[in-house]
Length: 269
Image (cartoon, rainbow, N blue to C red; front, top):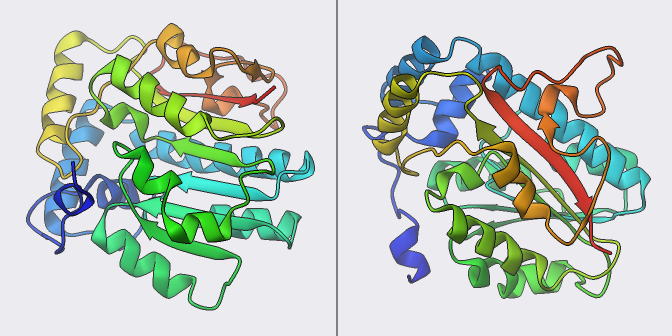
């Protein structure tokens, strides 16, 4: 597909946006009635979804800090969503002021907010592109000018791959994103999983997201999420619920029965 066919050119307040629904989960104000109505339907189905969103932000913060401490200075955040507390560039630049960050999204309202926020932050750029067209990301002239692919890069895919319905396609997309990364680069991601949710609840939730701008949300199993890391050095503790990934609470045990997000980080050997 051509990029213009993938990316809406105008903001439609009447169609729910997954980015604006996520903003609502986090208590943000950058959303419309249609987003709030759709988000409330999901909250009724999965009452802990607002906590899941907060856990995902905390997971992102821990991951970026860990990667910066490991010497990574280049970050590509795909599906960045609306700016909120402790964004990737804020965490990375606090830990390592020489970091360079690329934000990628296809939602017009995300681009407007991100570009306004980052107008005076030269270490960070915002690119309009779509995960489903990896070339639009990897071959973008702005990305190529900002990121040195001969040096380690961290590719971040937080809560986005579940919007690709076909699992084989989602794995292929990740493999394409991994292809240009040199040794010492990292792949970090989070992905929805159903836990012990009933099948009817999952189907109803998917129908709500199907009416939104990014389409249906597809939960995947631990084995399916682990497949994104095949051939890489998966860091401890592996693929686990995000609240248990190197948690500041050492006694917290992974609860795979509870619906939420699985997360993991791997290094390119």
